[in-house]
Image (cartoon, rainbow, N blue to C red; front, side, top):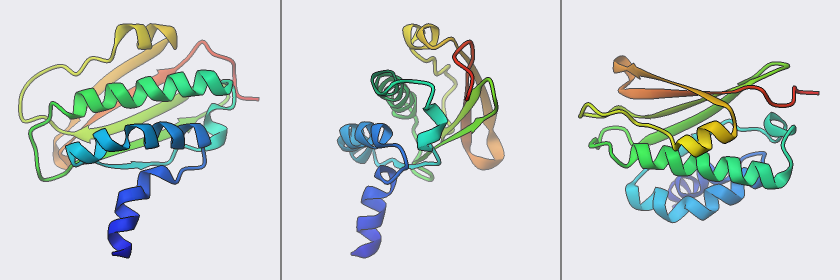
Length: 144
């Protein structure tokens, strides 16, 4: 039972309260699709945004990722992994979703991409059965 509880709430326990709220809001959709979410998002990764901007950013990030991942037809690995790497002037968010068994492009919403000046790159990682979606946040306030 402890293992089930841990798996059920694993994605909710991050260092960012805003990100936790978004994960909680999307939890029924994540659970219904059978996804397991893992993340290393830290509270300090997005300190350059106010709470409202963080909420909007994370909401659209998770919504877009789920939209892409829900199109996947795979039962072997249903994990979604989100990491953030940063330096003084940008953040690189790496998202790993199940690799598609079909050929299609997984495009993020254009409004989301343009609002945050995102540069988005896709890469198929056949050996890991994942698709990597890299989002570069640029033209924003540098890390203090």
